[in-house]
Amino acid sequence: MSSNSRPSEQRFNILPHPAKTNNPADLDSTSRKDITENPAVLAHHARDPYIPSQDLVNKLDAPLSREELKKRSEELNREQ
Image (cartoon, rainbow, N blue to C red; front, top):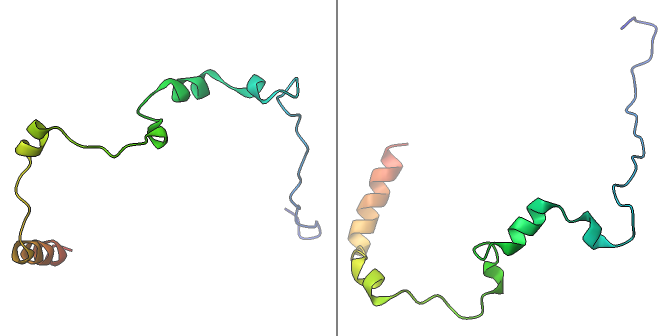
């Protein structure tokens, strides 16, 4: 840039909207439909709490005591 020219200002343009009709369903892409068909993504529609099976509960480790958790916390903080 030369020293006598003004710094360029930002310039904004109005772009055409992709909609051809006023129906919002026309804007749905295939990716949107894939999301709505996936039940794992629709977890917000769940009504009851998740209760794991007894087999899964039996596979879990016993919870750590307060002393064990404090010791582990100190170990992790020391490594930083």
